[in-house]
Length: 261
Image (cartoon, rainbow, N blue to C red; front, side, top):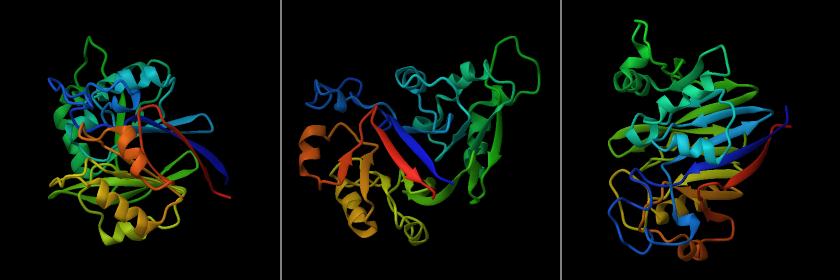
C-alpha cells in the first residue's frame, strides 16, 4: 500500500545540546537558527498517525514547536539519558486517549526504562498523574504500526548496542560508531538515510562527518541527512562542503518520503 511519510526532525543535537551550557564558542553564539540543536529525535507521520523515535529531555519543547496533537507509539533506539528522559512529558497525550501508548525497545532498553522511571510501573495507586504506557520488546522483529513496518537495525555504539530503524524507503540511524555488515545489507535502495555525524574529530562512541560521508558513498541513498551534531560544527560552513544530495539535519526540518506501491 502506498503511503506518504513526513519525517520531522525534532532535535539534531548531541547529548548536551547546542548551545552547550557555559560555552561561548562561535557555534554556541551563532545567530543561525540551524545551529540551535535540541537532543536527537524524529517524528514520523502518515495518514493521521504519529510515531516518535526517542523521548529526549527536550521533548516538551519539541512537541510544542512541532504542534504535535496526538502520539500513537514510541520507538526507542537505546536507553541513554538524552534519548529517554522526556518520557514523563508524554502524559498530555494520555489525556485524549483511553488506551496506553505502546512503547517499543530492545530488552535492555525496556529494562532501563523500568529502572529509570520506576514510579510509572508502581502497581500502587498514585495521587499524581503518570504516563500510561505499555512496554513491548521488539526482539529484532519488525514493529508493524498502521501499515508501516519499522525494522530494528543493530548498531555499535562504542562497546554498547543501539538500534536504528528502517521504514519503507527511509532509515533513521542515530548514535553509532560502526554499522555492522548485517545492517549495511538492510540499508540498500533508500530514498532517505539519516546518519550519526557528531563532528570531524574521531569519537569512541559516535561516527564522524567523514565516516558518514563514506557510508553515503557506499550505500548510495538518494538523500542523506546527518544528525547528532555537536557544537564543533557550524551549519552553514559544513553544509557548503557536502555533496548536493547530502545535508546536515536541523531542528524543524521536514522531509517527505513516498513508500509502498
